[in-house]
Structures are given as C-alpha cells and as structure tokens.
Amino acid sequence: MTQDHTNPTFISLKNLIEKLKKIDKIFLRDFLDQLIDHNLFRPIVVSILTTFILINGFDYAQSLFDDYKDYSARKIQSTPIRINISGSEMGFDFDEEQVLDYRVKQGDTLTKVLIDMGAVESDVFAIMNEMKKIYNPKNISKNDQILIKYHVKVAVDKNQQASENLGKTVTINSISINTAPDQEIVVSRTNSGSYDAREIKVNLLRYVSRYYGTLKNGFFADGVEAGISPTSMMNMIQLYSYDVDFQRDIHNGDKFEMLVESFYTEDGKKVKDGNVLFSSLTLQNRSIDFYMHKVDGKVEYFDAKGNSIRKSLLRTPINGARVSSAFGLRRHPILGYSKMHKGIDFAAAMGTPILAAGSGKITYYGRKGGYGNFVQIQHNSDYSTAYGHASRYVPKLRVGSSIRQGDVIAYVGSTGRSTGPHLHFEVIYKGKPINPSKVKATSGLKLSGKELARFNADKDEIDKYRKNIPNQIKRQR
Image (cartoon, rainbow, N blue to C red; front, side):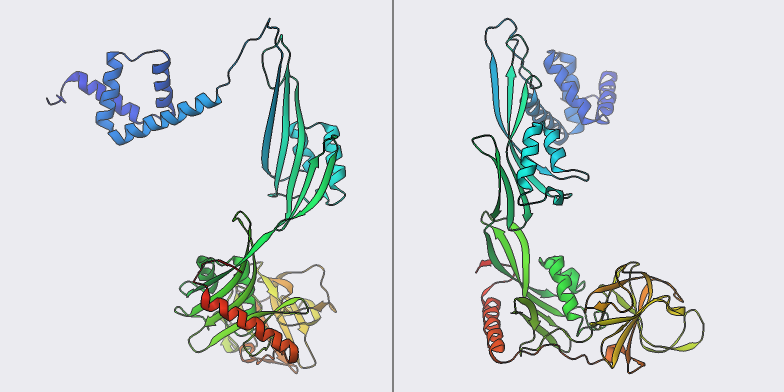
C-alpha cells in the first residue's frame, strides 16, 4: 500500500512534522513527558509520531528516544522522595559520608572553601591552626586540588517534613592537599574531636621512556608530538643553542632521539617528568649527542668524551626566534643606504625573554641611540655581548649586576631604529664587533680522573637503556 502524498490530511501532518523537526530536542523531550504523564497516546497522536518517524528517519527518532531514556533515568535518580511524617511518633537521623574533590578558584582560601561547605567555625579554626604547624595555608593557589572528606548529619524533628536544611551539621573528617608531586599534607580528625596534621611522602615509581623520530615541523613541535614534555624540549633547545643555529642548521629529515625520566604513582597516574638522560640530534652534516651526569649533586650534560655541553657563549640567546638579518654589509631598512650590520637580528614576538649569552657583569643598562633600550655584558677581558631594541628591562638588574649564562636580562621590543620587534645581538672581541655565528666558544668543564670514571659508568647504563627500551615504551627501572 502506497501513501497518497497529495492527500490534504497527509500534507497537514507533513507540515506539522516539518515544524517539529525545527524544534529543540528539549521541547520534544518535554512533549513526550507530557504524553506519558497524562496518558495522551490517542490515535491522532500516534499518527503524528509515526509520520514523524517515517519522514525524519529512524536514526533521528532513535536518537530522540535514547535522549529521552537517559533523561528519564536521570529524572528518577534526582527526584527526591518526600515522606510526610507529621503526627508520627518517629524521629529521624540522617548520617551521610561525603567526598569533595575541589579545584581552587581565583580568590579562594581554604577557610572560605570550608565555611562555604557549612563546616563549623570552631572546626575550621582548629584545622587552620593545626595545618600552620607544617604548611602555610596561604600557599594554596588557583588550580590546586583539595580532597575533603566530611560528614553530614541531619536531625529531623518528628513534626517537620524531612529536609536537609533542618538541623544540618557538617563535620570535616580529613583534608588532603598535594603540595608537591611527591608530597601530601593531610589534616585528620581524631577520635577526641581535635585535628592532627602530618606530611606524607608519596611513593613514586621511576620509569624511563625512549623517543625518536624524524623532524618535519621543527625540533620543538615534533618532540612534543612524540610525547616529550614541553619543559624537557625547552631545556634541550637551550643546551643545543651552544652549538646549533636553529634557523639555519635544522632541516626536515633530520633525526632526534631522547631518553626521559617519568614518575608515576603506584596506581599508574603520571605525576611529572624528570631529567632528560640522553639527547641526540642528527643534522645533515653532523650528530650532536650528550649524556646527563651529576657533578656535586647538580645535573650537567656532557658529550661522549666527558666535555661539558655548556660553553662560554650561547649562539642563540633567545628561544623560538628566526634570523631576520645576518652579520655584514647590508642596505639599512630605515636609513636607506648600505651600512655595516654589526650583529645578528633575531625576529621574535614582542615580550619574548632575552637570555644572557654568557656569565659576566652588566656594563650598560639603558637607552642608547638607534639601539633603543640596550644591554651590554662583559664576560672576560676579551669578550662582551650586546642586546638592542628591548621593550623593557628586568627590574632588579642594573649596571654592575652579576649575570649567569641563560638568565633573562630583558624582553624583545622595537625601540630605537627598528622596523618591528626583534633582538639585535652583538659579540664584541677586544672592542671590535665580530660575527656571532663564527665564534668558537670554549667548553666550560672537562671531566677527568674518578669523575670521568663515574661519568663513563652513567653513560654505559644510559646506552643500555637506548638498546633495550623500545620507542615510547615505559619500563620500570
């Protein structure tokens, strides 16, 4: 039997269905709710729903009814059961244990969180006093996680209707705050009703992960995509900056390999990344490998022969920048005539941190003609470095301040004679500017004797990891 699509009744039903199709699902859900609650499934309603299914398709109809089914289940669970106990001789005590996993919001304090929950003020006062003995609650900040276990007791008068708001008492049983990845502060209620605070060390399991791959989108982006944390990648970029010009030396198809520590809780939750144990960057014309080794408790990195990766000067004193103008004679973009460019320009976003290329003392820190905001650092009797066009300085620094290599000394800007935000970087040797990319910086520390033997033992262990750990597979040490 075929449907007569010219029949006026069918056309009117079809128009009704078309209107229903444009109505929000919430309206349709409420419509079904009314039909069921008031038993309105009459022949005309059945015809409308049947036509709706035929025209709109079974998939949409199934989606609608699945949505209604979930809604009905939630409605049953959330609808309170009210019992009228007026005139009854019975009294009720509702005793309930609750857990609140709370993420701290802007402006929150622990006192505010507890008071907002309904905790007794005397308990809040006792909790804060006890916690202060081992941890300052003021150190709790936005996005910190607080686990609160509490007790809700509701006493209901026999002549009143059951309600949580009548006689509600909130008692805090315990508060747990992770103050560090491997440390937790716990304040617990004792049997006597007082509170006791203690610091708990969380047992973390150490794993080693191996990552390697081919560069397609840049060292940082490809490393993070492989699973290495952004922090670890930035640390490696800073170390490679002694030997690598990231604008000119890196190409698609270059290879990388890294071994990274990771720490997990006993239930398998990753808490943090640890040190990078090994890193290798294979470029078109060379390979740069370095190994982690602790010297006097401090993490350092060395090549396979025990020479420190850290050198006297960084080749790129800024992260994530590109070379926009090289050292040498060029046509000046503002003055319009050829002029010697005494340094290298790194184009970067406004406000990007500028790093000290080496350790030393600040000899100039202020405005200087076409350089705009200018910084100069004297590293030794022969070498100094200069940084121009900064947008702003680091407030605590001034002429005479001691600087360590890698410290932030200013921020990228476009002050002075400049066409856009960038860092102008100079290396000055015995009073004359030289090409920064040609500087042969010397290695800082060279291991020998017993320290070299210790390094070789660490190196052998790391090489075993490299051979035995598959790519990106975690193994417990």
